[in-house]
Image (tube, rainbow, N blue to C red):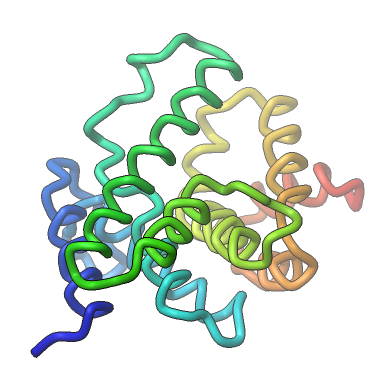
Length: 196
């Protein structure tokens, strides 16, 4: 019989797999975009946290749960619209994850804790929330930064890197600086950090 953790993880991944958008992986295969993101989050968690517990592992895996259901363009343009969309997405993903956990037999406190982590309540003070944020920043830098930076005006992109950097722990900074980057991406990061 599967454990509560295995049951919840399978339920989370089944929802991720419903993402109609696909992404191409390094080996040329395709995968639902959200499932690929979730797997990358889990891989980074193992590098930013020495001993993540089950609740943190589930929260990190579910951070973008069903994000495609509410597109960004349904919210106003600009920073306020983006932050509102992101907050609403975190609340919805947290509630869905908490329900999946309760259905699998987790205590209400554990389910609520996962929702709190997904909602990023306590960033900078809560080590589990910090681990989720570090994982998200590293997934972005490793997998999406280069393409994203080509679409965004240069000075705005410098500010995005600076904001991202401020949200990361010292350990995540070290991991980020060790990532392989194109010359253009590396130059942007150095400029943002005042090292260029």
